Length: 381
Image 1 (spheres, rainbow, N blue to C red):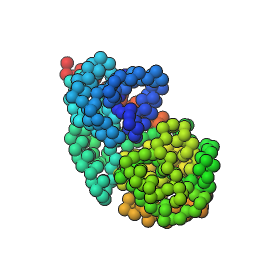
Image 2: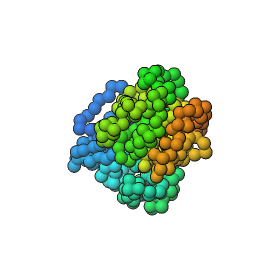
Image 3: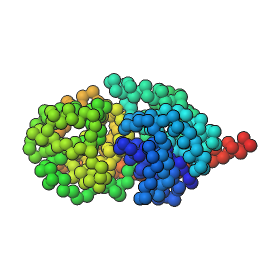
Image 4: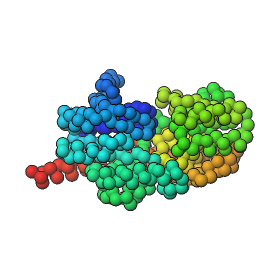
């Protein structure tokens, strides 16, 4: 099957990783993939089997994209030239998302969307309330897609309550390559001079609630042999670094682009912490779990669903700092607890969240949508 994938290649975020991993897996299974993304000029990637098409834009960030006035025209011309069997839009939160159903209907192309925005199952704070408004805004337009992929049953139920037909919403969670992301040797603890290593990996932004993590760490007085590594960058990084530094056992590693280095950091970690106020289904969390790292995450989004029934520690978003202050010393002093939780985390990924299993589900969805579109077209003739 020939899939036209409309997604994101930069700046780095979960959507970028999702698009790269899924399209590469589809190529490995023998599908043809044309990758359409927002860029100012045509990019030739000699290392990729994907045919790439640039869509012009005025502005893009990790959160949203503003297309140029020519973007719809370029997209229509590209799809006419490519003649794909199906269009899969990994939604980039741009105005183009709202006109895609009309464009694909004009071209008689089946259209699938993956809807990424983070959420909280309960509107417990301003951030989660804002994200709920995003779901309310998108729901009427998502109803016009042939299928909408979400990462959890909680997310599906939210969209259905907002009016998206249940039959059009498919739950296909994020998945990781459990062969690549796996337990293994690492020298990270030696490099960071740590006997016990706790790690956060993600954006340093308000919705990620990193300050609550840092505050809890500082007040826990974990000692010289325990370190907290912060992997990532974002708007709050400079201000937080000024108050939480090496004198508190906090090591700022910045954004780590090299995937193998990120894996090495995870393999050397004792515990991964994700204190977010809102989430979708965190790929960083799944990667840590696949590497056999004990995990703590809030019950925002689908992360609580991932860790339920003993696969990790689930935190309440209202009391992150207080909970972490209690838990940090326990996991510092009891190696056997982090070892056991790491094994359970790895097994949970193998049972539910491998990339291979999820690509199979995606192929089945593609086939269903494609066949339904053919039947519709034959009846219309």
